[in-house]
Image (tube, rainbow, N blue to C red):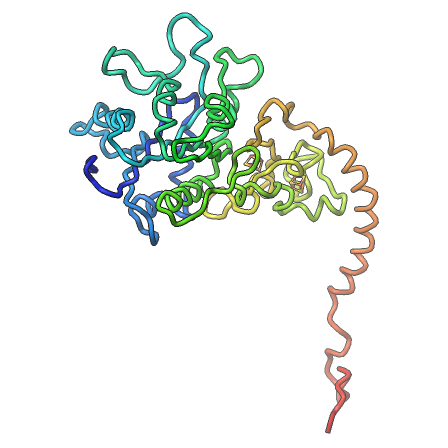
Length: 347
Ligand code: SF4
Ligand code: SF4
């Protein structure tokens, strides 16, 4: 239990009441580098004391410290009683202004009216007061599935709702950790970085044009894929269950920024194309509309794979000659009375 009088405490307020499946919360429970337990318990050097208010596992959600107490932390932040806090948003933000009555999604009640407090109102109240706003997962970052063409809610990402040039009172832009769901360690590592930044132990977080941490999203799926060698050799599969490159059955890896093939999904295991799943671009602002229909060969891939098939075929032939050579032992390794290694005695 943390009180408002605790000094040096950084609060982490997690709103999971955007339009979402809660997959990013579930995902974070699988983090190992670092784990959320290590962050919460301060097991890593230099971490500030952290009070996490996270609906998924919050220990204040029991009968004694029930939901009212839980939501009170958010009201305290709104009243300016919390000191430093990090605001994490999960889920896309529906447009509450496109209808005359009702609401799309909310988080607790407004004590003054007794009516549900919409998620967008929470953002209006808390975003500017936070140390930093973190959008967790593709729905919260860029809108994701709910923001597809033809949706009825007008959903958008936190960036679109607050504005791409929004900064908090600490001058920090919205930090986006996309992924559907977010890769667990990408999320925990970003939180860790921001906690170090909050305590003056790290410089301003480096973000790319889509507000993603640069060290996590600086490379393409293709650059980290186990199957990239097959691509280079023009060796493409047309069906699932093959170890070859998946681009002909819809992999967008060459143009998608994501480290999942390198980092794996949980504790280094998995990683979409590495284990046979095409990359559908779930970390990208254009997801999903610009990557559909899934399972078709991506448009640009037709030209690049045609070229790769020609030079890749030639490379494969040459490599097979080299491969045969290096697959055999040097000829001097054999029994006999003669030394065949080329050794020249110097004395
Ligand atoms: S499976 Fe996808 S990411 Fe991997 S090499 Fe092929 S195109 Fe690139
Ligand atoms: S590899 Fe592609 S589909 Fe898989 S998590 Fe990364 S962006 Fe999403």
